[in-house]
Amino acid sequence: MKVTSSFLSLILKSVGGIILISSIATYFFLLGNPRWEDVNWQINLTNSLVDQGIVPLLAMSFLLVGWWLEDSENPRQKTGGGLRLVVFIIASILGLVYLLLVPLHYNNINRVSSELIAQIQQRSEQQKAQLEGFVSELEAISKNPQQLKIEIQQREEIIKAGGRLPTGQQLTPEQLQLLTLQRDQLKQISNLVNKPEELKNKFQQARSQLETELRKIEEEEKNRARGLALQQSLRTSISSLMLAIAYIVIGWFGLKLALFAS
Image (cartoon, rainbow, N blue to C red; front, side, top):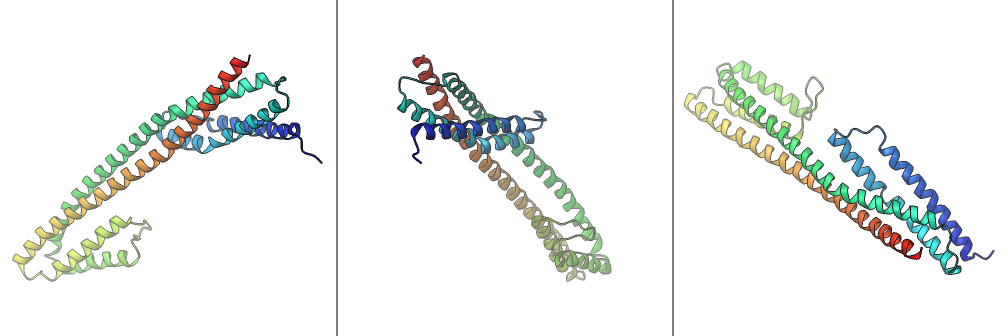
């Protein structure tokens, strides 16, 4: 069987049309049950739209090649002018949408990142307050050697369990690191129970060391949050910008040719 240009054009247009209709239906599905006030929903929607963005672009490429084959075979008889115009309009709309998604996604990522950093800051303040309570508790425990042994043993059990509390809650690596530091401090205090002056200096050293560790953990968490935000923002924004350029080129040049030909 000889494959003619007409047959190949028909196949390309059929496949392209089916993919385009399917992708547009997917867009409507993604926009179902909108929650515009939810920033996280907007971010997920943008990611989904960008991930889906190549599909209608591929469909339009099939249609354009199909029309080119058709026009090459019959240069004086161009069919489907209305359909071509609709496709170019869709391409222009998608180009505008993906262009607008770039600043929208950037702002949403910044908002989420700022909220996360604020939460980290708040948690750090709480941990500092707990630190003061812990040091005060150390001073009280140091007067009770038996209680000091119990505190060390409790932390030893949690560390050996990989950071899992008796309640079943799992500590984060940073929390486990802080707990290990507390255990080490308690052991050192246990060895200085009968040396009041050295014990006093040890409390000051423990407070300073724990505060330094807290600041280090806080900075690491903030840097990790900023890094993830930057990575997510760049990946989606650049992809959206590339899609916008592709659709605008197809849409605007296509409309120009269609209007000029008419």
